Image (cartoon, rainbow, N blue to C red; front, top):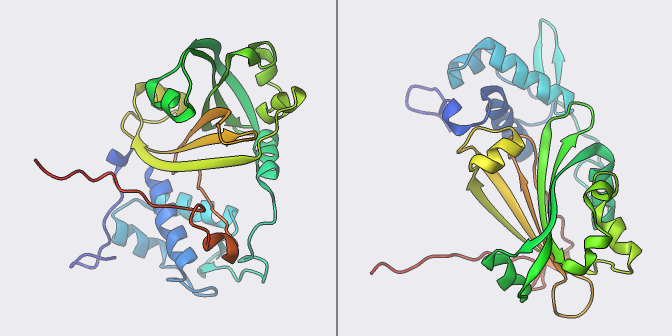
Length: 268
C-alpha cells in the first residue's frame, strides 16, 4: 500500500522492532502473497530507501536477510530477484507436533529462570480446573549459535512432578522427555494465539523494548481423558519468529480445528 506521494508507510522504531526487520517483514509478505512474482526484480536499493523513508544500510540488511533465508537472489550490479521455488516449496510439512518440539530443542539452548512450586494464577487455574499449588517453570530458549532470545516458555504442571522436573534437568532435557519418564504422553493440545505488548519482565527476557509487540501461544495439554494435564504459555517476538498452521482438508471441515472468538462487549 502506498500513500498519495508514492511513498509507502515508513517503518518506525516506536514499534519496538528494528527498521531492517520491519522492511524484511514487508518484503517477505509481498513475496509470500505473490505481489512480487518469482523471477521478478525487487525495487532498487534507492527506490526502497525513497519508498520507505529509510537509509541504504537498513535496506541492505533487509535484503541480506531475505537472501540468507532463500527468498531472493542478489546479483551485483544488476539487482535483487525473487527466487524460483521448487515444487516442494508449497507442500505442507510432514513433520509431526513431536518433531517440531525436537527441532526446537535441537536448535536452542534453555536458560531456566524458575522451577518452583507455588500458587497458580486465577486464569490458569480456571483453564485447568484445579485449586492449590502447582509446579511453575519459566525458561528462555536462545538460538544456539547466536544466543539471541527466541522463546519464553512458562508452564504450570501438577506439583507431584517437582521431583522429576527440576531446574537442572530442564536446562538439558526437553519437558516432553521428562514427562515420558513417568508415563505421561501428550495426546491432544488445544492452542490459543493472541497478541500483546511486552511488559517489563517479558521485554527483559526476550531482549526487547518495553511495549514491543509479542505473540503468545497458550497450550492446554491433555494426556488422556477430558481433564487437561498442564498449561504451557509461549511468548515470542514477531520480528524473529512466525507461527505456521497446517491442516488437511478433512481437518478444516471439523468444527474443533480452529475457531475465531471475539471478546466484544456492548457499550453501556
